[in-house]
Length: 395
Image (cartoon, rainbow, N blue to C red; front, side):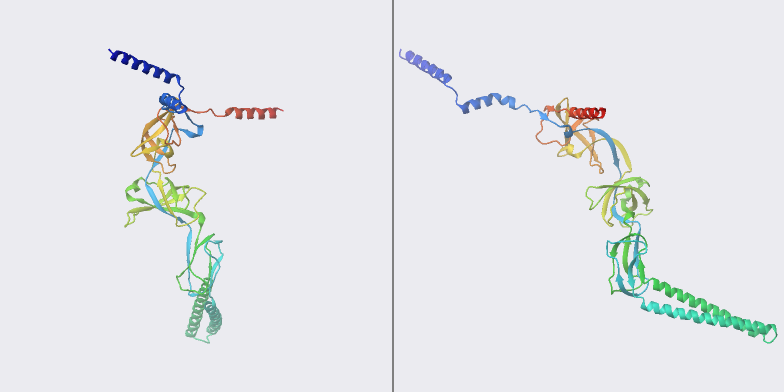
């Protein structure tokens, strides 16, 4: 009988305690925790993304060029390797590496002492031969007069003619030796054959220059061209006049353009590559010879959807991008193709169509289905400025 009154008292005390807890105000920390628990599902929704016009781009078709790779170096078309044509000591070198020269400028002077003595000796030989010829001519005329009067024989006249002919031959030989000596004397002064710059100086004052020794090299920096090599497997696609885009080591990402000017008819027997000469089409040419260059010949071209590499996100072997459609951000898987080495853009085979709007440089905190807000361009200020300008003109 006592169990029922005890049970009723326990239930009553429990109800009183519950009513007190409901009346006591909650602590600040507990209130924040409750509010966070209630608002938790709402925070999981993606926040709205604000995008500026410069953060997006429109996918368009572009020309995708493909062709064989060409590698080689930049070389001048006009170059001269000046060598010694006489044996002499180098007296003076007037130009250094990198200095510009004009056609006819003196580059190197050689010792001319011995050659000048030879010139003087040959000139004396010419004078002697000339005097001998004059004497032979007078003797011949005398013999002709005597022969006409019958005072000499025909044999004497013939001998006079032989002496005259021999004197003529000796004079011609002396003049030839004198001309050769003067030519040798002129070769002691080495001059620039055309306008250009000195690319390499091979000798210094005091060196002994033998015949054939390299003295100095001169190149024309305005005649640079790309001398490259193409694999024999791809040479069938290379034609004269095809465009070439290439980069030069030392000029960073700067692109140079040219056209195929010449294709060698024979492949290299060791490398099995065919040399091609590419004429530079840009006015801004590399001015340094010997630099390594690599590019691609535009042997084939086709229209394709192109996307900058920065707009792609790669995850392993797959790639995707973020497309904005109906003010909603969508993650779109892509099937990409070749990369255009000229622009760095990548061909998009599947996933996008022309006119789609994508993020130019997506970040890693984007969410699929996220709402996008794109503020309108500030055209009103431009229009007001134009109206103000019209008003001023109207005044």
